[in-house]
Length: 288
Image 1 (cartoon, one colour):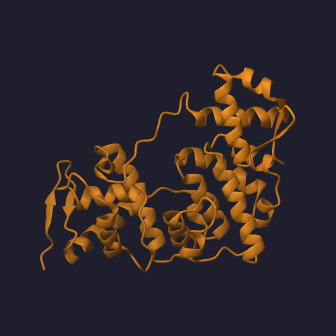
Image 2 (cartoon, one colour):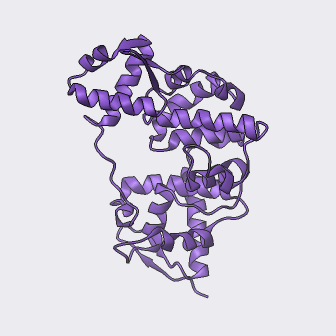
Image 3 (spheres, rainbow, N blue to C red):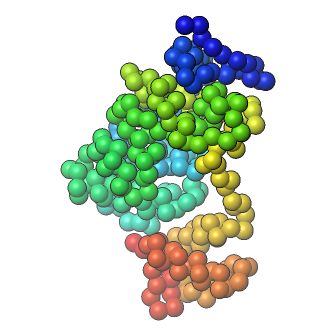
């Protein structure tokens, strides 16, 4: 069967999702790209499940460059599941500073505690089980299984989605993940899924710089809200403040920020409910 391909405006080939030869050509293109342009990242030099888990949680909604700065120090401070599970939350958050989305640090520590108490310090190689862990959805559970255990699982994340929409759905204005998944499954390198997904993610990252974002054509596309002036930014600043000061009156926290005191009190309430801070009378402090 002759491989059927068409040409996209940027010179790349559009592959046909129902054509086995076209799928094979796509696989060859991806692997060739990775051989020439694959990134050298520290979590790609390990299959230790703990280290893969840390990298996957860190990479959620955080740029690779920032993770590269934080990842080695975090592993040095907490080298394994027992070390992370037994650390004070203040210490974990101190190492996490600058990563954003601090609730991920709590989720990661809870994952470590569950591994220690329920799984004899061994991360389960099971997508269904990992999907029940704090802060881990099915896509992250699948990526952990692919990278830590080289399991031929099928999943989509933002860079993978970008690649498949760009190369297989050039003729479509709107694409749903339910349409992408069968193509992702057909294209999967089942002998080496770890390398395959690394290659797809690197290609997706590169595409982002070269073409209008294909993910805008995804039904699952959502634009991230602005950070400046957001509750998320204020949350991070409150946590940095309390990590430095240890204990402050609620009034002192509120007057530190130019926002309305009612907004700061609401955010403090959210942080308390989520387990970051605790109150004693009129004072606020980090949970140990």
